[in-house]
Amino acid sequence: MAWDFETDKEYQVLLDWTAEFVKNKVEPLDAVLGSAMEYQDPDFIKCVRPLQQEVREMGLWACHLGPELGGLGFGQLKLALLNEILGQSRFASVVFGCQAPDTGNAEILAHYGTDEIKERYLQPLLNGELASSYSMTEPQGGADPTQFKCLAVEDGDDFVINGEKWFSSNARYASFLIVMAVTDPEASAHGRASMLVVPTDAPGVEIIRNVGVGAEPPGQGSHAYVRYTDVRVPKRNLLGPRGQGFAVAQTRLGGGRIHHAMRTVGQIRRAFDMMCERALSRSTKGEILASKQMVQEKIADSWIEMESFRLLVLRTAWRIDQFNDYMKVRKDIAAIKASMPKVYHDVVSRCIQVHGALGVSNELPLSGMLLGSYVMGIADGPTEVHKVTLARQVLRDYEGTDQLFPQYTLPNRRRAAIDQVGHLIEREVEAW
Image (cartoon, rainbow, N blue to C red; front, side, top):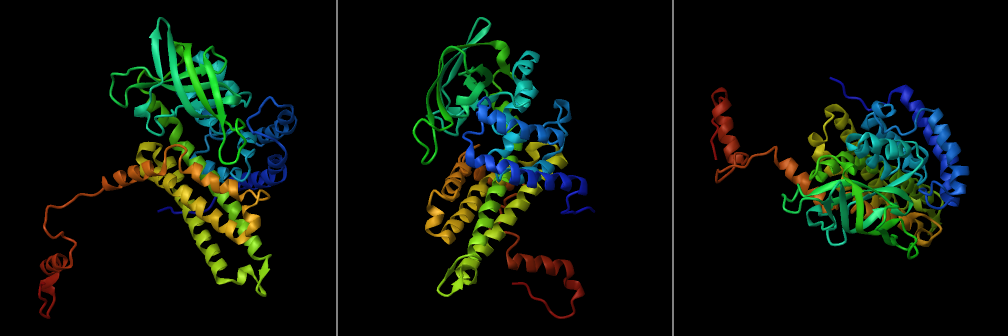
């Protein structure tokens, strides 16, 4: 029997290097640069490209990739440990070549793209030379793809796309979009849609506006409201079988949710560290905050929740590596996705409270992190959907009973015990 919580020494060396590298070289970029997706910006080229080269030289570039795509095939557990560190800086995932949504889009292109598509988009995407967008959600459809209306109609050797998409992240920086569009309106609910590669410079692709979150200035956000008007793309841009857009989408979601979760662990730990330092630094009513029992409760609750969530994520990553089948860990993935926003929200909220006015000011990142906890409850499917999935998966391992009083009632258990071992007991044992 093997049951271990240790990281192998060789990989720990890489994790230690990553932690120091992110803290000393990557985190400063968060304070002075704009979007982490502006790949052609002169400041990005001068500041980020040299760091990406250092990561390549350490052999840590795009570690999410399998060996067939030039990666190391680390597996989800090692990736989870790495992403916990990367989650502490908004530039870190770009510096390490594993930023969303590009990572998931690369997986789709690798599995389903033609050689032409791979040459034109996949390799430059893996090299960090261009950005991409995943254009799936619709204004009226929200998280329910069965409600989608964006239509792709065959016309000779092409598909012609008409419709609107909402919250297509990074579309303003992207060279191409992966669009889920209805190709078979009369098919079953989960057999209507297909995935297509659409260049952002194709005639008819229009960003109606860029949507921000929270207090971001109007028009400055990175989540695009996109309209497709008679957008023509060749049929060879189809990704996967026609009508199998749902199945194709699953290629990018399982691992992506694990990575989101571990990056969130990094953010939670960042807030927790700030809370502990503040508690040991600030005094009121004659003693430091750390001596106040209600502050101690906040720290204790936060540590328990943070460490419990981290272990659940790592166990899920380990199970993915063991089974190599996302369907066998659906409930585990649903569980971490459902618990992630609550743990994130609760720890950050306590941190804000301990910091007082400074906590809600724009001189700390906490208000943005608090909003981020709500984003995590919506992105890649809302919490409610994942709880339903989790409950259904769990209940598959159980059966109901048609007995009026179930077998686990104490009278029934006592009668069963008497039948099993009653003849060995000398004293009289009566059933209820």
